[in-house]
Length: 205
Image 1 (cartoon, one colour):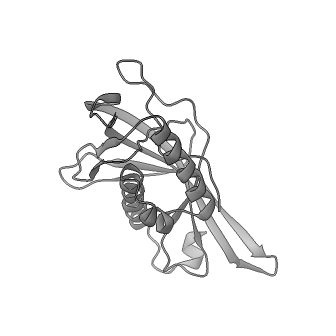
Image 2 (image 1 turned 135 degrees about the vertical axis):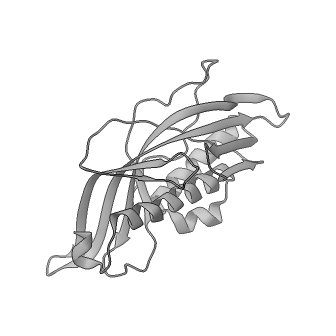
């Protein structure tokens, strides 16, 4: 479907682009950078994220450390956020995005669909990609007194996200945006049995 509407389409290039978007979203969530989030997610997804960030602040989380293992990408901030989620599904397309000395982000396409806005012009619509994204991360949340209240800054956890990205078919120059996250089982707990707060919530355009 993407090859029909985008000259020079490459699945590997697509996954590289989405890997960058994935890291940008996680950094923005961790730093509570709502200006950045507005450009990275859809309106409904942004509304869900704002509610999630507000809830975490109410939980007393004042500082968060987020790090993608093996990468220089990470965030240490004075605001509330963190992320991890898991889900199980299957798909046919899979790729690994990595540099020579970094562990990979692993992508698998679970579903691709076109949502047309006009029956007479099927190309006038949005492409939505449902992706399984695997990585290893370190997450820690602290209160205003710098007391660890969730996660472990030294513990690597395996993360499996199922995110939905979308882009308008008539504007392939525009970036992909997160439009939702599939409902998944409860987030895994740290060694102390404390639940790690998720980063993104189910949303849509």
